[in-house]
Each structure stands twice: as C-alpha cells, then as structure tokens.
Length: 180
Image (cartoon, rainbow, N blue to C red; front, top):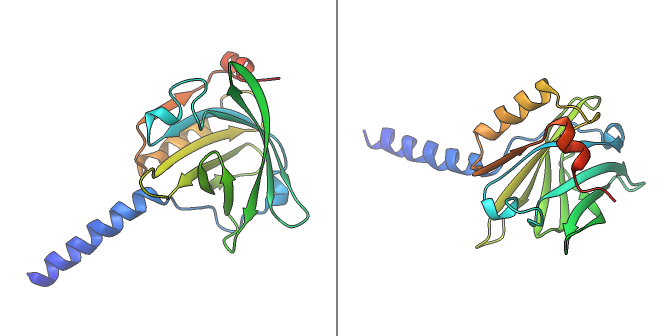
C-alpha cells in the first residue's frame, strides 16, 4: 500500500510538471519553417498576457528566418502606445532542435510543439522564472485562412496545458491584425 501511494504521488508530481512543459516536435528543421506566417489563434496561462491589444504577449508573428548560425529570426508586430511596431527577435538554438532561448517579451524559451512545414506551426513561449511563471502559445498558418486541421492540433495541444485565455481569429480579423 505504501508503494502504491508513493507511485501515485510521483505520477501526480510528474503530471503537474508535464502540464507546464509541453512535448516538442522532434528533429525540427529550421530551414523548412522559413517564410511568411499568419496567427490564427493564441492562448495563455494568464489572462493579462493577451487580454488587451497591448498585452505583453499579444504579438503577431509575420515571418521566420533561420540565421547562418542555426538560430531563428522572428519578425513580428506588437501594439505599443496605440500603434503597431515591428520587432525582430533572435531565438537562439539549443541542443534540442525544437527549443530556442530568447531574451525578449519577458520570456526565456520558445518551444515548437508541432509543424508540417507547409500549412501550420504550433509553438509556445515559456517564462519559467519565479514568481511570474507563464506560458503563451500560438497557432500559425501559411495562408491567411483558418485551417481546421491546424486548429484541431492546437486545441489538442492546449488540453494538457494550464491555459486561461484563448483567442481565435477569422479571415477578416486576420487582415485587421496589427500591420504596419
């Protein structure tokens, strides 16, 4: 009985940890994610990250470019002082192909959860620093149309994560996103 309780306790502890660190895509080829992307959905563990247009993680990824060093250059739009501002972030490669380190947007890690390279890419930004641990995820598609397969995969990935706010965008809203 004591062993059963110990095993149950360990399983619960591991389950809680797994909720904060999503499974990443294996063998990500950054050269294949190059190009234009459109945000069709966002989710976050804390409402304040996305609830306002100027929320700290309410960003619109526009383009991904691999660097010669194997890092990932991310071009995005973010609303600041009521206007759209273009930002460039360098996500540094790590030993894990689908995990990148960043020092921007108060986040410290980008994790690519899934991609088919041609239609969709799912990723999360994680801040593991105490006391402001947070997680925000996005579903990107290649064309400015909602992709049902991508949305299903995004919803499935979110089930295991502690998300408290979710935003989806239809094609009209995609055109109205923060653009310069």
